Length: 372
Image (tube, rainbow, N blue to C red; front, side, top):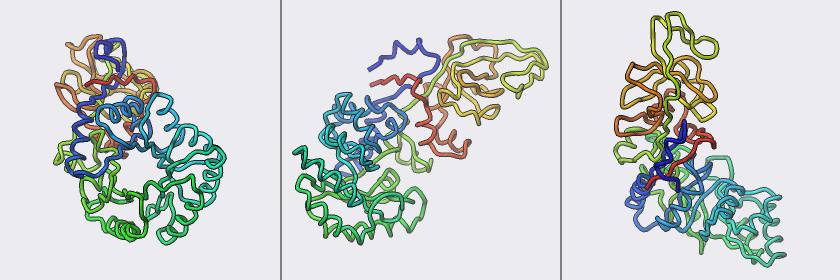
């Protein structure tokens, strides 16, 4: 893992606090007791760095199963040395990915006879056994079979001796909405299958359900965003003491003295009303600082707010500062340092989006610095 002494090399970086990740994982563990925990690490572990996060879950937290969305994510993990027995491909697969599923020992979601036939025939030809996970559509209406079709599909799967149904699962659509009746409806549909399917474990609960609906736990749970210290409802996040895992920082790369009337950045969106001092920081929308925040947000330098002025550029951003700011000073963009905090939920609210989108928008060129 990259160590802290490398911070000074970068104009922008994301500090990934593995102690906070462990803390959030233990909150899940405390709530679900002896049930299996399947961390979801899709989309680059929600922007946090999939390979290192996976290694931490496997080597330090001893998880037995990880969930990703796509086959190429599973391949990347296998190539990086992740030897965990069960890597679930939650988003299913296409016909051209069957060979890779077998080669890299991945465990796909299945929900159609066509894909099951392709996988079953290939595994027989290669004399390989593959675990599959049966996806049930209880109301999300994206992927999965309808509950009433489940038994027929199970019979079909059993025709292929090299395929084994390891788990049955579904996904909750509205668990993050307060006083939601639809979660109960989905639960009831899923529960109706429990006694009809033998020799497979069941999982339904996502982060929202883990925190709000203990009756949805079944045999295993699939936490995602809460592991990374975020939750849409800020009151629930605070109540459960989730800790942010990512802190996004930049640094001052230039200081400019403006005269009255000077304009800043593309289009001259900001115009100095008097003599002013501004700083240029080494982060832009190419790193994930959204352009919509131009002239309309702030950063923190040693706990003090510095307003973003002018248009955010691809690589650089201008901020209004006081005289004691100097080149090289650290700038908090997102997360928490010893001086203050800018929560991802507040930034997401400003942008009329969700924290998930903020996290995964932190681009690949931003180094992730893993701290434990």
